[in-house]
Length: 599
Image (cartoon, rainbow, N blue to C red; front, side, top):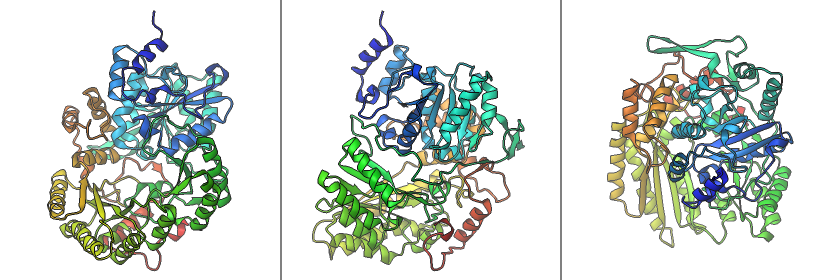
């Protein structure tokens, strides 16, 4: 009789990229399950290559596994070939470290980074033989926990999760797990444990709240249990120098999306771009000290062998004395041929100077995100860059020998007109002419245009998304314009996928049946163009009497209740309203480029 181990060994020979499922990477932590009191699986609802590029995974992996009484193992969404085999051989979804079935763990924590991964969450639960809905789970089932950016409006997922953790979990999660162990040790049953965990800071238990409606209008949350707080406030790490940090993360056997070592310079962002959810939910700005960063960088390189070290943050060039830090890191690491890099740059001469310093001898392309092509629209979104700065910065880059540029824009931003769309093409045309007279070599420009998606907890949360027809029309303007512009490669996002993202970003619990139905019909990897099937979503919405347009295209008023109003990211709603009103007036802060209260 074949054991699960025998079947798994056979399956690995039948799938593409078996290293996605083998585990045993360098620095992977393996503990005996019998030697710990609590077993947690970190579940990332996308492929291994994507999940292993997620910095939050590595932080929590370190945070939990440093506790001798706890373990954390990893699991990723299996690719379609592996899913087919798991179902064929009735093999439950398993973790990488021990290859044990997920249902044998105490807790499964899902990282919710992107709305179009929601069907993968349901698929992973089903593959693990765990009931999808919290109401159907029994005492021996793992607790299903969610966290990450999407937890700041998790309502479409609420029926499927036992609880969510809002904010930065590296310090609070061990305390929550300890609380869970204590409650279980005292003999409390599952629902009582979940209810008592709601008293922990940052914990949201959806089953303790009922969404209230007046007709079709959402009017707020009603508490079913007095222990549940009226407002759930996010957890924030105050001192990054003392917080857990992955100095020896697992090193994958196959190439991942971001295949390099990472140090986080600071958390939060003082720029205040009005469309950017991360800039608001990660407030305030908190920095790591230079000494800590240098020490950590050396340890990570010693423990991993990476040849590239990425200095990440939402706006890395805002780190004080960054050039001095880079000089020190270069002095420490150059003998080991380790290069430092910045994930993205701001359009200013200082950033170009840093890029030139970091990429000596290997100048391929630089990435910038102007977001809008007109100064008027950049003022609306608070992206305070002038056209003069754009030309000066790119001119400096050309003089330094850079040969390619990737430029990111958005369409559908609030207050956008056709002239703003046409100006994306015109700006690139002017840049081409500018380069001809200045560049010694052929310069390439890659332009990528996304569609604006209104996100919770931002000044634009009240704004509607453009209709798909209008998005397609504006994309046609760009396609026509760029066809006539040689030397510029143009790509765009699928309007249907952006629509679906907006539906779930602004959704409530009425979306849960549509989500479940779409999964049942075969929706998987909706963020991947080769798997995305919008017709299935249309059928799911029709079957469950849901109008996605009511979520994506609706303009909210300030006095309306929003599905996420009971969840606090730490930013006062009146401040968001004030920022929204400034954007509508095209107002630009005078004399500053940062929000002074954030720095």
